[in-house]
Image (cartoon, rainbow, N blue to C red; front, side, top):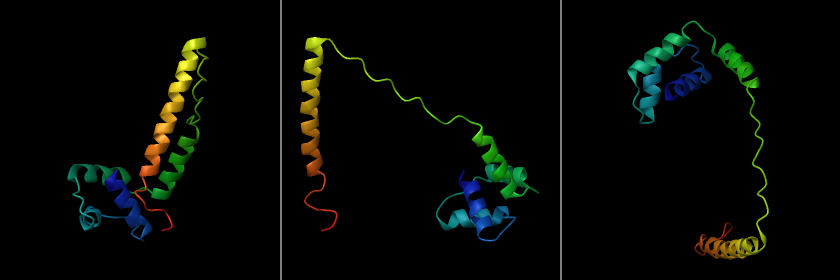
Length: 112
């Protein structure tokens, strides 16, 4: 993924056909070591292809993938006494969380 990101960054910078040396140079400039095998595979796959066309084709493929979720079902109501005990426990936990959250800022406010 880092090799592809470097390839795309170089493309945005105006280098329409980045070489392995270009990609290694970019990755080295930010302290990332390039993997020669993966880099060679990437460049072989992208050779003589327009990156904009590949992105457009990939976007079309992603459009057909369902991405919505049904969400979780609402929890069923508990039995009389068990439900009441659970509700009290939840209220106590909420109060504890509120106390803990107030300590998170350690006396510093967002606009101090």
